Image (tube, rainbow, N blue to C red; front, side, top):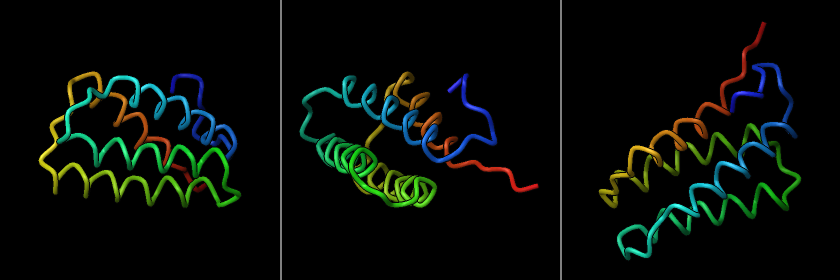
Length: 97
């Protein structure tokens, strides 16, 4: 996320989210316990790729759903995955002046 400014628009945030989600999906192993996280990320990847819905709205829902899936399924991401999840969550931060 180093090239993304706080004032970036929805398209830039959407493109960055697609990259981060793709990276996350590539790092997930085939553990059955992680399937809910994989399915959630794939679902939001497709929605970001194909939907005309507002990017901040999608990212907001994604953040809530991510927290729910991680807690309910007791999923503990690796350090690298945690860093990517943090980047993904940070995309929602928009400053209003």
